[in-house]
Length: 82
Image 1 (tube, rainbow, N blue to C red):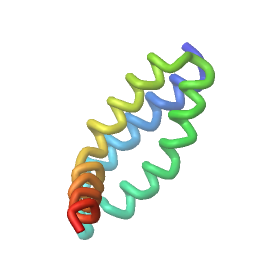
Image 2 (image 1 turned 60 degrees about the vertical axis):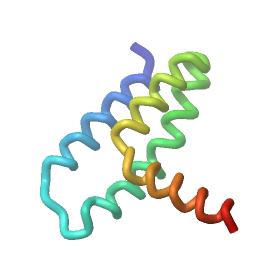
Image 3 (image 1 turned 135 degrees about the vertical axis):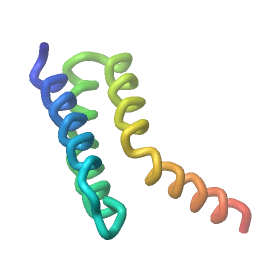
Image 4 (image 1 turned 90 degrees about the vertical axis):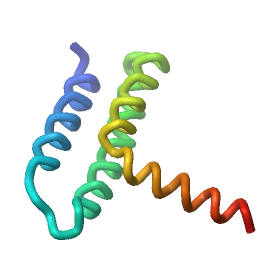
C-alpha cells in the first residue's frame, strides 16, 4: 500500500473516531480541519495512484463530509438563482 493510501485511510479512521464523540457545534470546526487536511491528501493519492483511485477517495471523503457538501450545494443554488 502506498503512503498516500495509508494517509487517506488514517484520515478516514480519524474522521470516524471524531464523529463518535459529542460536540456542541455539531463538528463544524472539525469538519473544516478535515477538509483542510483532506484536500492535499486527495491530491497526493491522485498523484501517486492515478485519477481512478483519486475519484474513489474523493467519493469516500464526500460520504464522510456529506453535510458540508449539502450546505455548499444549497448555497450555490441560492447564488445562481439571483
